[in-house]
Image (tube, one colour):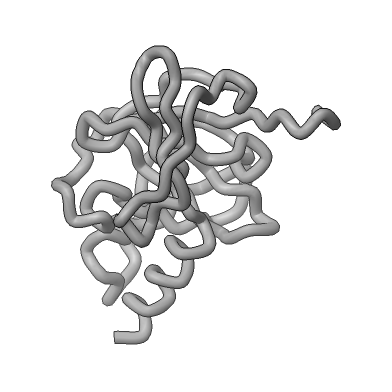
Length: 141
């Protein structure tokens, strides 16, 4: 999409709609078997086998302190160039083009870059950089 239009993957966490740039997501998968990670903070719920590599699984709702995901839902595996990380979310809705955005606003949530208004409601664009920084801070404690 060389005209500046991006594709966003839209997903839900505790009933709220969020999005990530589709280029940042390697795969969407059903929840696989997880393996415990000793001494990991509670939102890091374990590790999963992703095509032969172990990837850390983060319960995004628990990490954002808005609840906890149940075992159902979907897993968003991030591109390994970004992080060796997968996010547990409630569900994945669809992929949208940014040219459908009607309005763009700032958000008070430090993990959200922007709030987009679309014809069917609002979507919060998750800031992967800030999310990864916060995970790193959590692991250092």
